[in-house]
Amino acid sequence: MILEPLITAITALVLSLSPNQAREHVEAATAVATTEFPVELLLSVAYIESRYNPRALSRIECTIADPENCARKTGVWPKSTQPPNVKPKTSWYCGPMQTGGYVPWNVCQKMRTDIAYAYAVGAAHLQEWFDDKRCVRLSEDDRLRCALAGYNGGNAALTNYKTSKYARWVLTIRTRILRNAARAASS
Image (cartoon, rainbow, N blue to C red; front, side, top):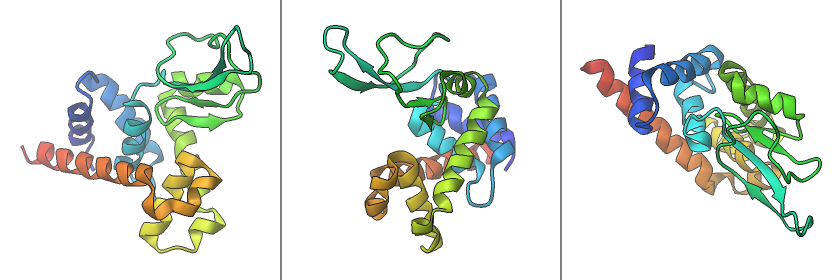
């Protein structure tokens, strides 16, 4: 697919996204797209996970008064330093595709500052789930749903991959991106 219609398609989803920012995401997704994970699917995951904001960060933070009182915090973290009150040995989910887990802060930072790297890590993580023995035995559509469910919710999510709201949402956004791109290409 040509880049310009995809750029138009994702800027239609996130009106605050500039064409230059959109181009960076489209180029990064295009560079790592595969038959199983085409560019529009990767862009759909990034939309769901961060609305294409590379500074997105999910982590577990604890209150100062009660270090045992911890909760997952999501959203944009604009700084390059770790957020305060982060639970020791926390899991980080970083960048536009919110990939990570128990990775060092510097790896998380790279996903938040290098969009191409973030898409490469996200696509590789999707591929790991796609190749998981519980997903690989399924039909093509179910295998994709299984991989998306695993990407979003880990092992526990695989048991309900057929009804995964996350997988359904990603696929709905993929359809929206394709429809918007087709309109842009024809105009």
